[in-house]
Image (cartoon, rainbow, N blue to C red; front, side, top):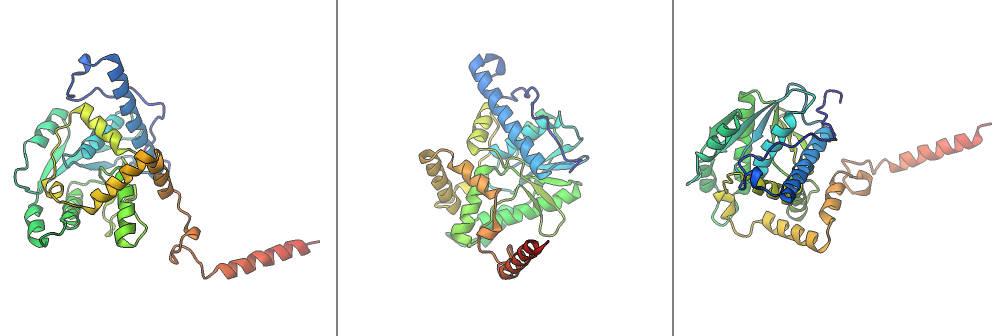
Length: 303
């Protein structure tokens, strides 16, 4: 794709730390090296994901969905950093969906974004009340909350002329979704790095797809992002996703590199070695075998 965003793999100097817990001038040399190494790794991984999946193109207006969590803060900061050196022009607009959760600190994100001088919008939708009203006692709120949030953000993306909707899902999010669908949904699917919405009106991208959650958490700590916890999700006990998250974390401790191998498997699918009749023509294998044999016999009989 010739006009896809292509980043220089040699990297340029990283951006300075924005509002860190420890001012950059007071960090010792080893800390500065550690932070620069981490930031370069995240920049490289995001850049590679953008290149591999053709996420951003000339003239794109990228809407970064900013929840107030570590992932979306990191997504915005890394995209801002890469934007300076990109060979194509694209713009960023941060959008936060204020779901009217009780106690939500409405001032935090505007104050943070004002300091960055980033275009942003705060979209107010009382999805919290709808979720609490519609979700039976003892059931998790995630499915309905996610659906309402996604609908609100997709509609707003069209209103502001955004050509891409950027979400902060990382490598572990993708793997957790894979296992959730296998364990509880009976399907082999995860979160694709790039997705056309069901109605064909929004292009969703996940630039953090190659990034480890641990790296993002460490980057957020260095940057001292003003994290806003989600009281709706965080207050729910025994979430299936949390159980899967703990399982994957345990695997990674006992078998380092397993998550990397599993993520590679998500990008290296062999339909003929699975059992989905829609993805592979199992019924036509005999016909294919007959053609191969006929071609082999014809080749053997050639003078």
